[in-house]
Amino acid sequence: MAENDSFFSNQAAKVFVAGHRGLVGSAIVRKLQSLGFTNLLLRTHAELDLTLQSDVESLFAAEKPLYVILAAAKVGGIHANNTYPADFIAVNLQIQTNVIDSSYRHGVKKILFLGSSCIYPKFAPQPIPENALLSSPLEPTNEWYAVAKIAGIKMCQAYRIQYKFDAISAMPTNLYGPNDNFHPENSHVLPALIRRFHEAKVEGAKQVVVWGTGSPLREFLHVDDLADAVVFLMEEYSGFEHVNVGSGKEVSIKELAELVKEVVGFEGELVWDTSKPDGTPRKLMDSSKLANLGWSPKISLKDGLVDTYKWYLKNIKQ
Amino acid sequence: MAANDYFFSNKSAKVFVAGHRGLVGSAIVRKLLSLGFTNLLLRSHAELDLTRQSDVESFFAAEKPQYVILAAAKVGGIHANNTYPADFIAVNLQIQTNVIDSSYRHGVKKIIFLGSSCIYPKFAPQPIPENALLSGPLEPTNEWYAIAKISGIKMCQAYRIQHKFDAISAMPTNLYGPNDNFHPENSHVLPALIRRFHEAKVQGAKQVVVWGTGSPLREFLHVDDLADAVMFLMEKYSGLEHVNVGSGKEVTIKELAELVKEVVGFQGELVWDSSKPDGTPRKLMDSSKLANLGWSPNVSLKDGLVDTYKWYLENSKQ
Image (cartoon, rainbow over all chains, first blue to last red; front, side, top):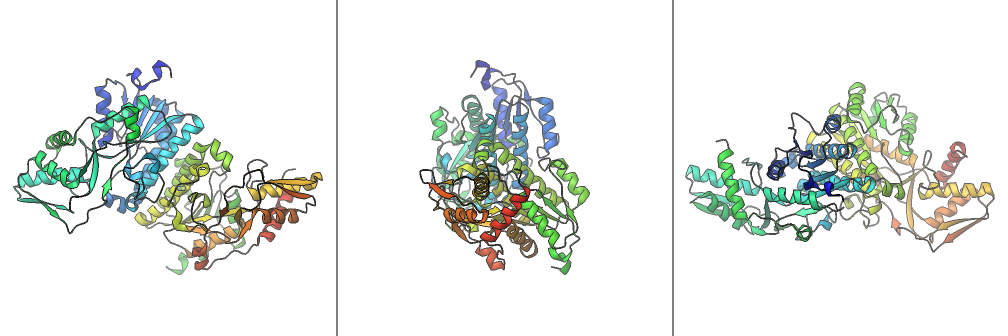
């Protein structure tokens, strides 16, 4: 590859970050700016509906970005997936198909497509390697989103084969950090715990009750680490297969809850309602492929929680 | 359901058959006409490019069909899938997403989405039941097409769940009949055999050499039977799961070749080149679900081959 072909070699290159206001997209924007990228192409949903094929085509024809980071997606928890399955599959298929196709047709040099660990089978081996993809049935509660994201991975691979288009895919583990969703009903476990311990502290509650035994093992990655991995892959990776992006570090839900309690500074009691379900016993991605490429995360869970809680205090509406 | 809600109850209802010029679509049009349907909405690819979202939306807004039969797709054999994977995944995703979504948004009563047995895992149990979907890795040579078709099935299911949209999916086995592809290089085994025996007869060749041992088992369904099943499902089936449409009858490639030789009237020798590969040992769909609903095929393989050869003689370019 010629010198001026690498991602870092030209920080005035136009980079389109689709979904720049979300948890992932906003972290990627922060990272690009911190690295000195000066020419970011950003469009809100109101300015550009990525589900509209002709609008996306017009944007690409007019703007001709050199690089694209596709972090725009319809995301949500179990309840949202169960209630709005049509939105989860159709919106994501439309966004992906439009952005990947228009990227190819308008001369984008490289695109990185983001998904999540939801793409993997319900009973994938743990830790989950990249080749577990499509090896057995999906988790029914997020199969709509998963099928769409798998189609996106396959679309990137297909465009690489047929057109030699430099399209790569990265699949992060559970992410947390600034701009996460702290909604009381549909946030994921980590932001939910932050919110609940914070509210309990503010209200002077005596205890916080958490469902289950606390024994399930989970992996978390601070979104700034994910953004760092994304720019690393944009620079270094042009392989066919998608790449898992995880921290490789597991914690039990109990350890997580105790850490959140400490970071938030809640002094009441943490109580486990063991009559409630635990959820899947273990979920850990195998990120050895990325580690072997030379990348590793920097943010410990404790430091990440401190950073996230700080952001939460500054930004939440009371 | 009120009497006038049934598919057969109103033969002047507007029925959009997408892909009406292909093997499957043309058979469906023949069947609808023979049943007395008078209001078929048909558009060639030149008239309506189904990959164009706004064109499809305008079309549905203007025409407001009551029923949609989605038989339009980009199809092809192993070589085509390997060479044009981007086309196979993207074009099919675009067609499906546009047509299913526009159908819902413009008041279509019912849509049937057609796929094929390629959606199933490479090592699915034989006969292949509907619940084999996504239970294991796909056949790599057609995974692009398969992922797109699986996404279509899931999209129909998702729209049924979220919007109570009557969207069903039918997955036929290997089809043959009028309007099939008889191209010397990329046709499937049955039309390829018809063509080769015919040309050998016309040229007075002494023998026809067929690859393999002839032992693999295959299932074939005449496309007029498929069209009949589609009518049946439009009238009778509104379930979440897709439905296999097969004949349930297996033949060996050897039996098939001998039958084609007899129907075409080639008097030379049929020779097996057993140094060449056989392909997968067995491929049979489990169509018991459809049988239990009350449908069975009418066209025997011999009668179907006679009918197909007759069409070939009348229609193929010499």
